[in-house]
Length: 294
View 1 (cartoon, one colour):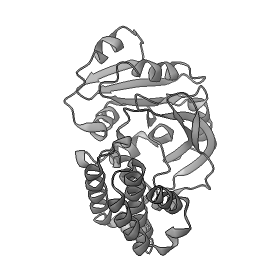
View 2 (tube, rainbow, N blue to C red):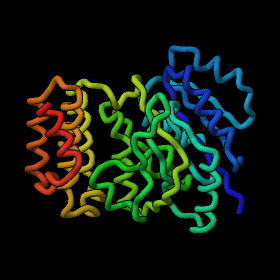
View 3 (tube, rainbow, N blue to C red):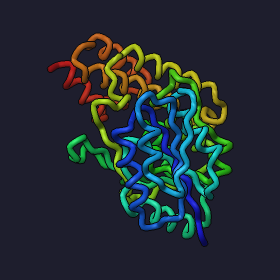
View 4 (cartoon, rainbow, N blue to C red):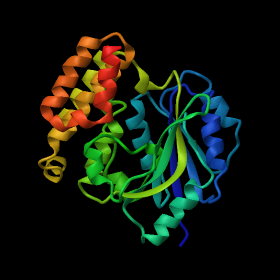
């Protein structure tokens, strides 16, 4: 069965990077796809870079800045493919990305949603982590943290259209986790443990921002949305303490990593343990302690 994929690339002032992301799509073994670039109000020469590429199946849209969730939603509404998937403009797909997705669609008879594995690399190409070893479906794992990368998730177009990203700007960098929890409360998220993409950590990546006030505001908003979603709370009934602990210990870890806010880190580590004492056996807990002590 022929399958068309819509690859949505949100971008903001990434003219120097987006060409690499697009080229990684052009290098796919399976080529039946469209590339939808949504420029989220860039002030650099992104439009000029895109216009010079001259790619027939690339569609460029520029909109007022509204953050990544809004840009991805805009692209989803423009998509014409059977499946929608996302690629951040600073990440890369390997050549087998769409061919593996095509196999999944045919072998699993058009699943609503599935994910492929990915790895995290630094700006020099060194692999720091691999997200590919999960039991399918991964729904229960999502309560512990966001193990899904946008570049690895595929949704049937009608599923994507009925489950859009939350566009609250404060939620930015958690908007995907909030969506995956909503989707997981409705459908099994099948895990295919083949690495087909990489997320690149670099100095400009927003999740590395060390402003702890923004970080706390983000997770406060995240928990408010999640805890007020009956579908999520019913599905994960009895496990919400694990979710809260994951959020609090994430704040603790990232504040500890800056080396500037140890008291904040201690406070949120304590909140994480209070919600779910079992977190003391996790690698994250030990990492926080290490950075607090050193």
